[in-house]
Amino acid sequence: YSTLQLQTIMNVPCNQVPSESSATDLFTQLMFLESPIVLFMIVFTQLMILEPPIRNSCRHLTVTSFSRSRFASVDWLWERAVTDTRYVSNLDINWIQISKIFHQTIKLEAHQTVGILNFNRTEVKEWQSILTGVKPISLTVEPARSDITWNNLFPEWIDEEQQSEVPVCPRLPMPEIPKRSHFGVIAVKLPCQRSANNWSRDVARLHLQLAAAKLAASSIGNSVHVLFVTDCWPSPNLFTCKERVIHDGSVWLYRPDLNVLQKKLQLPAGSCELAVPLKPQ
Figure (tube, rainbow, N blue to C red):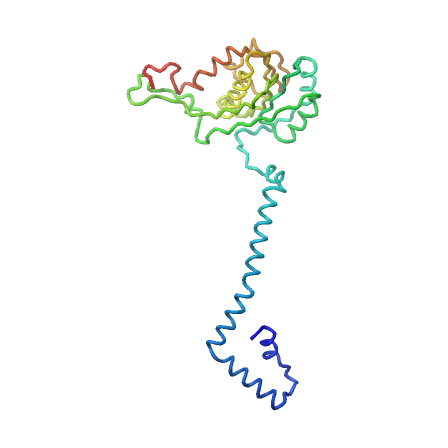
């Protein structure tokens, strides 16, 4: 029995008086429908007919929604990406000040570019607007593990004689250096918890400065400036006072000795490890 036939049988108007022959046919059909096997076959057939389109429709909607979120709405996902709050700086940047420093102090060679690290999308666009004739390269670095603390990097005591274990510093990821890139400037925005008494003991802050040093040292043989945007003093162990060119408000410009900087990067990140182990590892 088709759907139309079932509707015809079950939807007889109440005010319609059937003829004797039609009443007999209707009685026969209803008796036929009372058989459990027949009823089961009819219901099963209807479910098999109706179910696949519904299932396919749901699958189609799922794929369409997924495709749109993965490809058509990349910007939407980027804006809502989970950010490690340890690396976030809410400092309002004085772009006029930075533009002035670039045009008056920094002279890029024709083959050099600017690497920018830890700036959000809006700030990247600002960099693109003030750098005339130079396309900045937006750099990224993987955040340090959340369980790495300052005490892990600078413990009060380590097993220097290596009697029980060989002390090793936690790994701080370094940025990948783009191929054929010649940096003239490395610009980094550093977080600064100025209200905290131990603002200098910040793992994310140290991590970003080590990443900046790594990027600058990769351009050894060239003149490279490192520009920090922060309210807090950069680490003098990595970037010394004599290497500082300008300090104006929240802008710190350095011209480090890249040979010395490269040697510093070969040392452990903190006191968590011996620079020269007593025993081979």
